[in-house]
Image (cartoon, rainbow, N blue to C red; front, side, top):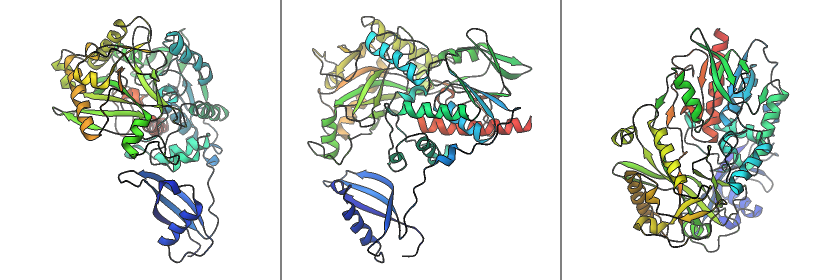
Length: 523
């Protein structure tokens, strides 16, 4: 073999994944001219569990010289000096806002990040309050605060949005800020909600140490509009923040921002979204179904699943599946119940949970009496508030055994759950309008035909999973990323309707920052 590096793809039994000699023999079988001594580096790793023997599929780089493993520190160590005449306000410190800020630094623009919530460390106290004391802080919770919803909602790093940007660059930036290198290798990378806070705080350190600003407890309640342009924002105590351009990346749950934009006669639109429940199984059951093993091999991760069905032309699908995970309370205001899922880095909880949701089209909304820009948001709120009202005033969530839900039976008792605030038996049919409830029931019944043993009363259905995506879209120009009607306003991320998860939000932030740079260069 010449000195240039080469790439091979091999398949090995899962229990040989840590056997260096076995991997080398597999590589030699593919590359006959390899000598006794060579170096290799795994570029990609995925699992093939379709047959009785479970395999790892490896894409491997090989060389007769030691392969240098990049540390990516150069990505965050060589920012240029900032142009004092170019500043951008970034409202929201989630993945869209923070990656927009990093991109601004790379482009020589000073980012000023404003977030209504607290830094990741202080935010933990409010998460404990909602979990254990059932108290919801409307500015600091599982959705609001440094890092956004993704920080404490699992940290899955896969997306279908490959056309939106360079996924590899986002992953490398995360590694540069402390994420494990495995996220560069795994087919479905994951960080974990116990690791993400440290990474998020290091991103803030990068922003601040290179001339940017990050300001917490800064709830924006008004916008500065002058001569048809967005000139800045005003926070709750009247302080003004002005800049050459403003990125709004407030996430899918910042309902007050949508109301503010509407009050200012800034165009926003209703968009399709999805709503449903969390379904929680014992992880050992999902492992047995997916791997056909009991117990699961120590060389295999907690098994995930992905299911899709069609009910009368409408999709019902699993969403944000969390193997070895936990169900968490994701309400952003008192008087509502919202649930979400997360996993820690080891994914070692005895439970597996997934959102199971149905698409809600604009036609669905209008046919059921929800009209106007806030049609989807009104439906969301009505369901979340109803779930709260049938309870005892706490964050306990209504739940039903899975087969009981499908068959319309009462669950006289419930199994253990990962949901710390607690659950109580209820007919989930009381929570949803009949058309949503029926669609979920039929969709889940179809899941059971696709995944044997999925339908069991060992599993529970917990209401309600309602924050899958924004029911509002803030329109923008495809080329400039600026709002169609307001100069200097750049909608961004999940809250604007252009992303759905950490990776796609981060890439959208980068793209919008580039749009800001073009705008500033022309003005």
